[in-house]
Length: 414
Image 1 (cartoon, helix red, strand yellow):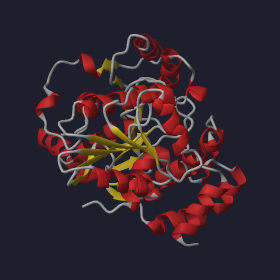
Image 2 (tube, rainbow, N blue to C red):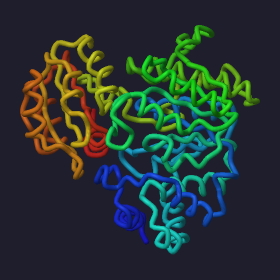
Image 3 (tube, rainbow, N blue to C red):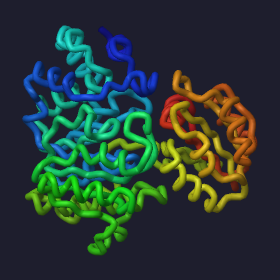
């Protein structure tokens, strides 16, 4: 099989969540346990760090991975979803898994996969564990896919568990209250394993405290730590919301040191300053062009867009142009409430079945005072925004991982 044929097989054999949404969600660990057993339990051969949370878990994962890599560790990194290419999900020292390795894994284990019929995400995670074990990584940073308790990644026995924050997302699976969602995320907390909680939230704190007590796990709330000054480190991540992630990662690094990891200060400084360069992270308040200033961000739910909307509203520009698209299974109305009214909107849709049609998004947005036209493609929406913007303006592209991913893949920025 070619690389594209291999990806098509992975997507077609068990449809992927990032393509069709909730219908692809397969809660429970039976499939992944059997799949990993068939591979020789590679996840038991490597040290891991496990990161859950509604938002920020990707950025936090990359910050920690970059710092570990700068400390001399051969570092695996498993994240999702990808923005441009599947290989972004599985990295070692910032280098994405090769097309050959993806093809070889599927061809070698196709019979096992067809026997168990795992989901796309389960196959992806198993591939990562197999790759990390074969390449003898020193440690792998593992981002939870969805939730925590029933997520495929929850078979690992990590050195450290991290939960960034709790917000309303995937409520059809995780519950419709913050404590219920927190309970699902807290499912990654393992016996006698330290856990860092990124943000102290009144509705959720007790859930984590009780879970940590039940598992005899040391618990620390990162935002309650006042020293040392993590904010003194310059960082390649510039979104206002990143302050929480930088603090969470910094406190987590301190716990890793207590666990015996050798992480010199210079490694932290370099890891933070060059995190995107080191790990290949994209789409987090990323500058795409300076004429006019063009920025993209993957904030895609109300919790994340709250920070994005505030930063956009305060951005020093003459006019604000927003290329915006969302997927159907988010709380659209709540998300739109977070976006600035004083802006020109270019509503669009990504080429995925999950995308909310641009015209529908435009109609919903009008109810919230957001004005603009609808465009059938991201390229068309951006082209219109660029034609209307002056050098003193700002163009923002976001609302969905898919919108950002397609912009990165299909548009030539200058």
